[in-house]
Length: 201
Image (cartoon, rainbow, N blue to C red; front, side, top):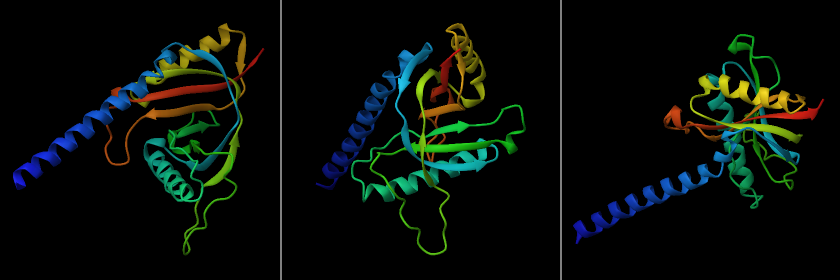
């Protein structure tokens, strides 16, 4: 009897893993049209945002952890909030040491969110509510490690120029699939949308 229960549990776990894998594979396919750069229009988006300075390889995980912690607390009050991929914006040039980079990390939330939950004790959260403006944007999908984004960025920037547009916003990245909070995963299979706000010259 115990053997049957054990086999049933193992089978249920295997089925769950397979279903999760297939669901993620199907989800990722919806972004593959962006292997070629595209011009699209996006509405403004209310965001939970953390500003953090330093090498993103060291600070990114901390920022995203802080954002999700706040998001899960908010979901108790705002049931309509959906889980979404984190994003980042980089307002300054990349031609400075990574330790001096200032990144804005954000997660989209619904427009109904008006205030953040109060922190317990002396803890003070760095998370704030902000609206990220969009409008016309150019974007492209990068598949692979973050360290190999340069060639993808160059393709997108050339596309923008060839279309007669100019960049008017920060460099933005949308982390569709990346390292988890526990496991790093395979960097060759990371999915990142690279995005710029643009305007006709």
